Length: 165
View 1 (spheres, one colour):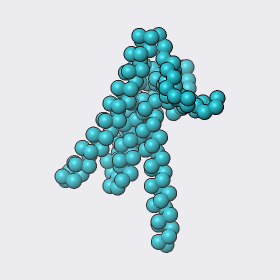
View 2 (view 1 turned 90 degrees about the vertical axis):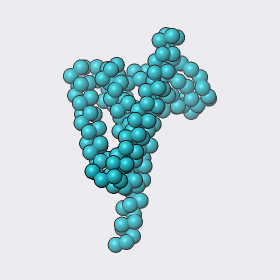
View 3 (view 1 turned 180 degrees about the vertical axis):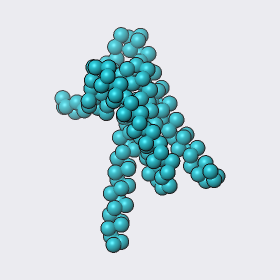
View 4 (view 1 turned 45 degrees about the vertical axis):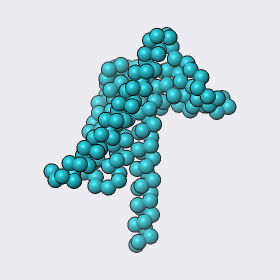
């Protein structure tokens, strides 16, 4: 492994761990608050509350399952996807590797919760005039930003290659 590749690996690792730790700290705070107060339902602003729910599904509660076999299968699939993305991050030599690090950092935070708590604590509740978005957490924010940036980069790169042809 050459020096540049090692430096990139270390930077990606720092990004990934930082995101994981930010997610863990936010969830630790909310879970401690729930332990002390019995529940979490905090008014932050007219469009934002902290409201703790436990998500047994994947992103935004999709594919929620109460049966252990299905839950465990989804958890294994998530772990395998994280491994694939780590490999992609390692092999990638452009800006996309940093976006992949955002996705993996968030995904590892949620995977940790799935393994330790058998559900993911979600607590950020955005709403507007009675319409509530899915309740989510900090890990979901980083996953969404990473995926959005990957999509934008891909669209931008495809447009550039189409213009050059």
